[in-house]
Amino acid sequence: MEEKGRLLSGLFTWPDLSWPLILKVFHRNLQVFKKTWKANLMFNFVEPLLYLWALGFGLGVYVSQIEGLTYIDFLAPALIASSAMFSTTYEMTYGSFTRMGYQKTFHGMVATPVSMDDVVMGEILYGTFKGVLYGLVFFLVVAMFGVIKSPWALLIPVPLALMVMGFSILSLIWTSIAPNYDSFGYFFTLFISPMFLFAGVFFPVDSLPAGLRFIPWLTPLYHAVEVIRPLVLGQASWSILTDLAWLAAFVLLTLRIPLVMVKNRLIQ
Image 1 (tube, rainbow, N blue to C red):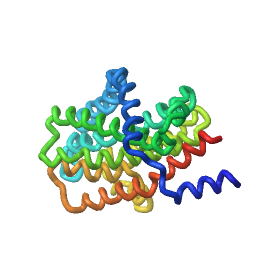
Image 2: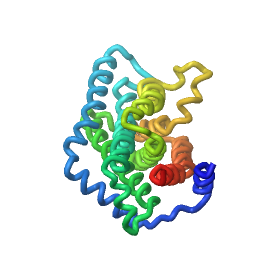
Image 3: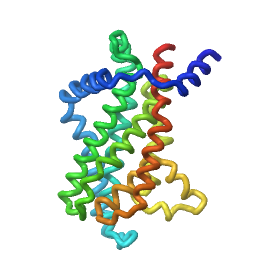
Image 4: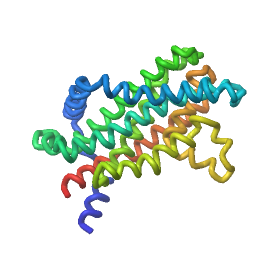
C-alpha cells in the first residue's frame, strides 16, 4: 500500500531535474558508446538493410503499386522509422537494465549530486540520441537507393526524435518491472514486433479488418511512419501535423511514469 501511494504521489509531483546534471549522465553514456559504436551501428543497420533488399527488391517485383507507389518507395521510408525504433528499444531495455542492475551504474551516479530523475532523463535523452542517429544512418542508405524525392526529407529528425523518445519511455517502464533479461522477450513479442508488422510499415493499415484499424493508430510507430513517408516522397500535407501532435502528446503524458517507476525499483 505504501509503495502504491509513493508511486501515485510521484506521478503528480514535479520531477527534481537539473539539465546540467542530465547532460552529464548523457555524456557518460556517450563516452561508452564511442568505444562500441562500430558493433552497435552494424547490428542495427544490417537487419533493416536486409528487409529493404529482400522485400523492396525481392517481393517488390511481384507487387505492382501500393497507394500509387512502387513497393520500394512505400517500404523504404517506413524502415527508417522502424530502424530507429529497434535501436532505441534495445538500448533502453537490455542496456538500461544492465546499467541499473548488474553494473550498478545508476546506484553509483545517485551517490553523487545527480538525482534519480536526472539519471532517468539522461537515459531517455541517450535513447533518443541513438534512435535518431540510427534512423539518419538508414536514411542515408535509402538516399543511395534513390528513394528520397523531396528536400522535405531533411525534416525527418523531428518525427524521429518524438517517436524514439516515446519508445525510450515505454522501454524504461518495462525495464523498471523486468525481473531478468528473459522478460524482455515478452516486451518484444507482445508489443514491438506487432507494431513493426501492423503499423503501416509493410502495407497500408486500411488493409486490416475494419474493427482493427484503430489499433495501429494507438502506436508511436504508425504516426512516425505517417509523417516520414510523405516527407521523404514529397507528399507532405497539413495532416502530418496531427501525427506530430499525437507523438508530442504521448511523450508529455507518459514522461513522468518511468522517472517514478525506475526510482521505485531502486528503492526496493
